[in-house]
Length: 391
Image 1 (tube, one colour):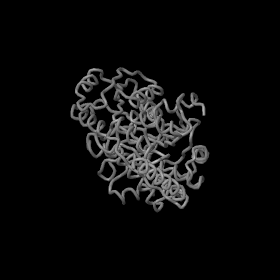
Image 2 (cartoon, one colour; image 1 turned 60 degrees about the vertical axis):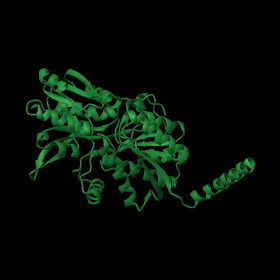
Image 3 (cartoon, rainbow, N blue to C red; image 1 turned 45 degrees about the vertical axis):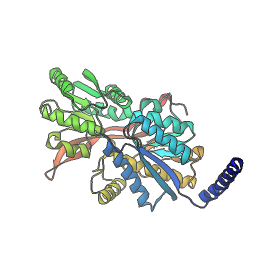
Image 4 (tube, one colour; image 1 turned 90 degrees about the vertical axis):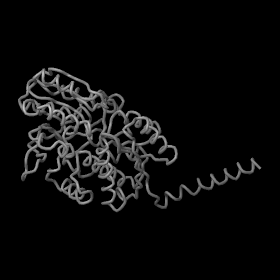
């Protein structure tokens, strides 16, 4: 009886297998695994990536590049182990080949290797650590946002342009935090008076604020994304430092959500970014209008990156007729044949962006605080690791 049951189960499995291939050929949706942070202090970052990606799919009638898609969304819980578990399940049970969504580099470091080892494709809407850009670059890994260092290099160059000579710099002690300080120092021409690493789960910055006060720098560069940044900014203002020690930061430390949370104390903060919601190009205006209509809020940079990621994938799928064969997909993807919301966009030799960077400032517009684009900081800027990549 047991043997007959096993034979019956095997026959059923074979029948299911025979049915599966024609189903895809008949137009079954392509599954996309979107693993992102939807809970914890960085939850709103993943929400913006998810919402913008799904918006792009909705705007194309449930498709990307003419291919019907099923976006399978899972929360990594701000925990690398949870992200890895979800990816393994997607690979094993759902047979997903195309992944995106991760916010934090420490989570990407546990998820992307499994995806790439399975000959899957990973398109990053945010996390882009130095190891994936240099010697460990991979033919199936693409970054749509930035390379971690280059984001903060733009802040270093902005600090130069603002005339700051003595900077206090700090960031959480994980891959993206280390990349942040390395990137800032690469282009900043002045003196770093002190370099401090905080904890990724830190909520009280009293000790660091005391160190800043004692060092009396010209300005502070800090990288604390999501809820970490909101907490840091609030405590910085409450300590009375904002009036005497200005901040010069990169986009993740002052997005539209952080600005709403911090309020008046953020006025005057200088920052650098590859995109802002006031960009006056058709693709950006279309995105911002659609996002605000759909979700009744202003998108952050993370939302813009999620939307551009969907557009880039759509452009590739349109050329491959929906195929995610890695070699075919790569040829199409590297053309970057889409209208980016940031304007100019192309891939460098390590499949990371080459793009322009801009100076922004928190100012009052019509009585309300807003992030206002002031001018260009860097043009056609790639990253420091591309020369190490051999693809």
